[in-house]
Structure formats: structure tokens, C-alpha cells
Image (cartoon, rainbow, N blue to C red; front, side):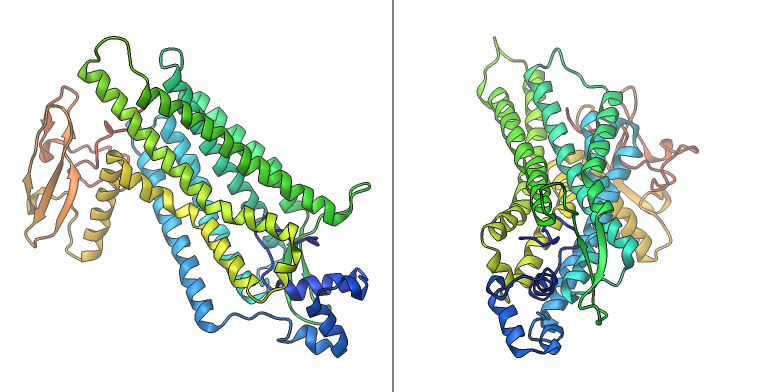
Length: 445
């Protein structure tokens, strides 16, 4: 029995035993139906037992500090990393591919989770008190359900698109307009799924004479279904729709892609260009597989916890339930910070842009008064390989080094830094003389 508190709510209660006992008492449960902790409180016959430390699981100071640091890491890495991914794609025309549009949408959902959800719920779960008001209680429940739905639907749509493109390369080519329509549809469906989180979320004070405020999702009774049954059905449907069905769909999609790219043999001898095209698709598929696997691993314990507590609700009355749930919740929320690292690790195009941003930021923070691109104070080592852009090391007179990409001219020739200046450069992060990684680069499709 969830009693309006369910794991999928962004405001899941940390002080599980206290709140459950109080709600059970309010519902006039018989003493035989109450857990041992509640029976002990009734036997003592004092409000202090319910209001005091006997029923409140306050984490030790070192645990609170550890959780604060871990959740702060999610906020910082998730916000900064995904913001850079969004800039990389939107600020560079040649990076605006269909796959990259889906990656931007995924980054928007992850960044929203990191900035507007994680830290607020971490504070709530650690202190068993919601200090952020009724309005944000509704907002955080809505954001939690919205971003999870949007993320998994985006990954699924991206996987299906890649599968069709690889399985039927001649007949399929999704346009950017079609991708944007699918993204809009994803957000519409996600809003519909998350809407109950805004409508039915509310704050309550337990006990009524205390100042402890909790934020929870309390469904009303619906026909012959009680509030608890409606809550349970919503959780089960949400879990199936946003986890098990997408995971099953993507497992089939990547099985098909793996068979086509690694096991099937083309007719006749393949040219070197055809082999390189296959290798390029394999790299993209590998990266997307890692994204899917990380998502599955991060969210699986969260869903298993819900299933297990439904089968055996007594586990939520244990003293270790609060730190265990915090660990599981952290693992689920940490999914929003991993994808930028995956792109950096597995895609050379994104890696080059990330290095440029890091170089730019390091030079701003060094107080040297110049950017990576100021050729008056830089010495360049150039490398060439046909028409492929390569990195070059730029060293200033002070010894500061950074990595950028050489610019590729439309006719295939490389431009020197002093020839690459454009007065109407649209990107605020691009230096004044050298271009940032050239728009020519894009994620392989």
C-alpha cells in the first residue's frame, strides 16, 4: 500500500516510517494492521514518540554531507555538460543532423532534471521536510515525470530511426523537419503522462500540530478503486510505458542493427569508401548502445525497488530504507550527467568541440589576457591528411597549450588562422581569429 507515496514521485518521502504510520492512523487502521514500529508508538501513548527521534530516521552528518556532494555533482556535471552539447549542435550548421537533434532533445531533458529537480528532492529526502512551498511541490513532481518520459522516448525514437536507416538505407532518410515533429510529439505525450504529477501533488503537515511539511502525490479514489489502488495502477503503467516497453523495443532494434552491420556480408567486393561508411555507422551504433545501457542500468534499481516494496511493504519500515532509497534515487538521477562524457569518449567530432570549450575556458580563467585563437602570441604546428581535419597544438609565449581543429576550406584546402576570420561569426564562444571546430564536422550517420 503506497498511501500516496510512490517511488516515481519526485518528492518521494524520506521519513517513510513516520509518514506511513501517521497516514495509517489517520485512516483508522486497526492495531493488528499496523507495523511493529507503529504499535510501539501506540503502546507508549505519547505524541513525542511519533514526533521525536523514535520514528524519525535522521541521517548522520557525514552521510548528509556525502549525499549533498554526490547530488551537487549531478547538478554541476548535468547542467554544464548538456549545455555544451546543446551549443555544439545548435551553434554549428553542419552538426544539425537528425541524430544530433535527438541528442539535443535528450540533453534538454537531462539538463532540466539536473537544474530543477535533483537538489530539491535530495534536500527533502535527507531532512524529511519540504521547505519549497506548494507550487514547487507540484512543479517538481511534474518535471520528474516529464523529463523521464521525454528522455526514454527520445532514446527510443533515435534507436528506431537508426535501425530503419541501417536496415533500409536506400528507402529511408528522415528529414530534419520530420525529426522536429517527432520531438514535439514526444514532449506532448510526456506532458500528458506527467500531468497527474502536477494536478494531484500537494503539501501536507504531519502531524497537524507540527511544522514538518511533506510533498507527495495523492490520487483521489476513482469509482470502485481506492486512492491506494489508483496510485498503484499509475505507477505500474508508468513503469511499463517508460521502461520495459522502450527497453524491449530498443533491444530488438539494436539486434537488427548488429546483425546488419557486423554479421551480414554485402554482394561483391566492397570498396574502401563502403567499408568506411559501415565503420562510421558502427561507431554511431556503439555510442547509442552505451547511452541505452547506461539508462537501463541507472533506472533498473529504481523500478526494482518499487516492485519489491509492493510485494513486501514491510521493508519500507526498516531503518536502512532511507539511505538505500537515497542511493537508488542518486543512481537514477545520475543518468542525466553521463551522456556528455559518452559523446566525448566515443565521438571524435564532439570530442574536438569539447576540447575547444575547455581550452577556451581555461584561457579565460588563467588571467593571461588572450584567447586560444590570438595568433599574434601563438605558434602553430599543423598536420595534414587529405581533406580530413586534424588537431593542432597551439602554444602561447607563456607555454599555455590548447587543442583546436584546423579549418577546412570549401575547395579542400586548409586555411591558415589569419585567413579564417569572419566578422559576422554567430557563435559567442568562437574566438576572433581562428574558428572553433569547423561546421563541416558532424556526427556520422
